[in-house]
Image 1 (cartoon, one colour):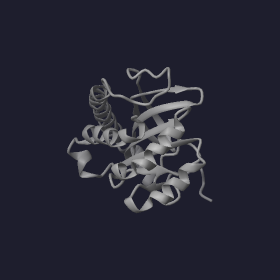
Image 2 (cartoon, rainbow, N blue to C red; image 1 turned 90 degrees about the horizontal axis):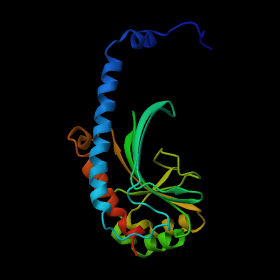
Image 3 (tube, rainbow, N blue to C red; image 1 turned 180 degrees about the vertical axis):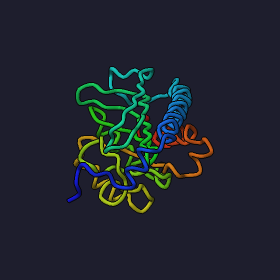
Image 4 (cartoon, rainbow, N blue to C red; image 1 turned 60 degrees about the vertical axis):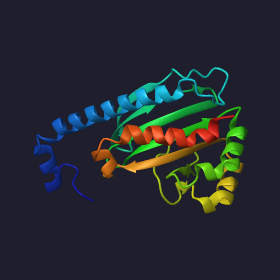
Length: 206
């Protein structure tokens, strides 16, 4: 076991690096600008959209959140639309997770859940093969992806997706864009977020 009072060479290099935190501040400002641009686009997409939603749903509600400790990594996210009311959830979250990915997630729970499940299965081939995944986690607040965490929505997995959905009290559909994806470098994150929302509409429209 290492001595808790002794710094490793890597740790000493990090604490001596005066460039990191100014660079981090610039990155986080660009993330906020990215989420602000996405918010403008999503507001336009929501305007007049016919959705199956809880009775108290307000399409104008949103929130922007910034933190430092999502499994030890900084993060920012936009919820738009945002609806959390007791056991009702109708939220599209766009999350930046430092070192991991931009994550776009539709989280659904509440009185219309059965209809959302039916829509997903009945319209499955409209939604499949668009880089979307179904979360397998027991909570909507798990953000890791891959085996054991998410199930890709490919055309051949409809029976498997239906089986996973059958007993769930909520479900979350997710798209991941790695932070080293060229789309991030090229400023395409707002467009990808809007595309993801539109690709998910068959789940939440009449």
